[in-house]
Amino acid sequence: MMRIKKEIDVIVENKLVLEKRDMNIYHHHSGSAHMISYNSSITLPLRSRQEDDYLHISIVSGPGRLQQSCIVDLPEYVNFQFSNAKDVTISHQDERTNLQIPPGPPDWQLKLTLGDKKIKSPTARVIVGDDLFLKP
Image (cartoon, rainbow, N blue to C red; front, side):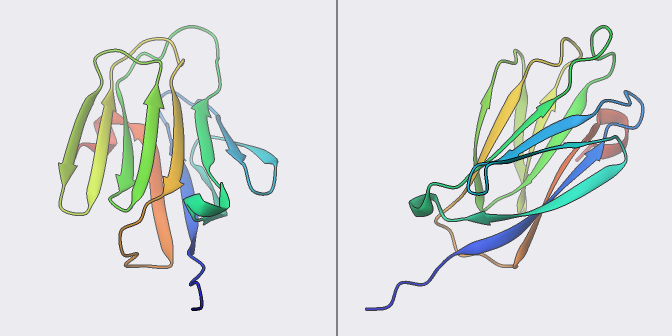
């Protein structure tokens, strides 16, 4: 029996325009680390969980705390682990999941893996941005 290899391209967008914070993205399969500035994006392949692949996303520490709430917008077929944040509001609407993160230190981390659900598109968009602009 032939095993179908699951892989998608994940577009990670940094829409922290008001905060002007950079983001770190680590891709486990390639061992590569990337830093993207605000209003920028990067596209990385994400393989199945069986191939032990994941993306790790975090906000670069800067001077002071984040002054605005921010939103992390995820497609439904991507699994995630979210850590180091208090009072996060999680909502699921149609085919997207939103994490609303209150102002504070940029100390949260997000780990994404490819879920077992049927993939509807060869690309997925993950957006981290200012709450003001990305309200669901």
